[in-house]
Image 1 (cartoon, rainbow, N blue to C red):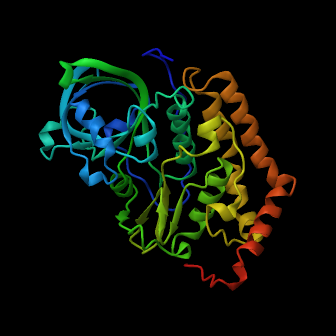
Image 2: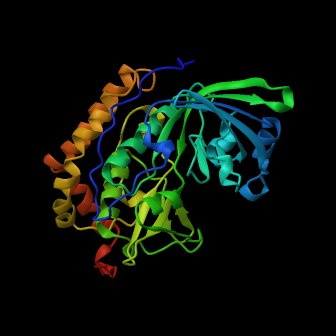
Length: 355
């Protein structure tokens, strides 16, 4: 399906901070929430060929030229680009991309990318059953941003890709979005990124307990079990640290959720997601603040352009979101939490809470 190049996206909402951290202003790229039109030329023949490499360091960067408009003036920037990702890298004809800016700051000055660090460019999967995934995933990031400023910002794009290995032939024209750099998000919040080796992981009790609980509820709401912070299972979670020593989890890559895959929301058992060792009184204490997110979440869905979420998608997602919040009222959520506490044998775990 081809989408029109010009259309509105959604109303921009203010973010209710979860912590006492005061986020500074985002870079130019993420201050504007309108659709960004890009024209990218690179050696996509080589970029596509590098999908065979499992390890990212084996995928070589190719020079790319990005043309765009800012304040009505056409701008051009030279960057380096390569294929990234894992599942979509192998299952989609057009892979997600990593954009690395040249170190010369003058290269970015006056462009939409001024002040930006390396970015992820999430692209559309050509498979007809997956072609709308990128559109739905965009709104998960917008919802997540409502929950906490310690989240990655996104900017919707419409991109025309030209292959300079084929004399500039247009190979695709599609919607997608740019994803904020984690280190830059951390800096925006007065935090620093922490590198946690995948095989090492970390103790879930060492992260900010309140934020982690809200993140668990959010992941459960969108039916996502494809994340973890444990040894040999550190996936789709970044860790950032405050000056006070507190650690905060940051989720990304939501393409495995039912929200994305079927435009619906189920409810994955907490025990499949992580070691959800919270007692019901902790969930009950935090629920009022999580409940305040229901209407902003629904507003994001209802205000989306019909090109990005059609009527059926909006109806299904609205119903499913309401059903999740109803779980608290009818007691189903309490049963899930208490059942998980028993199955996970949480009473045997040292549940020291970091103050």
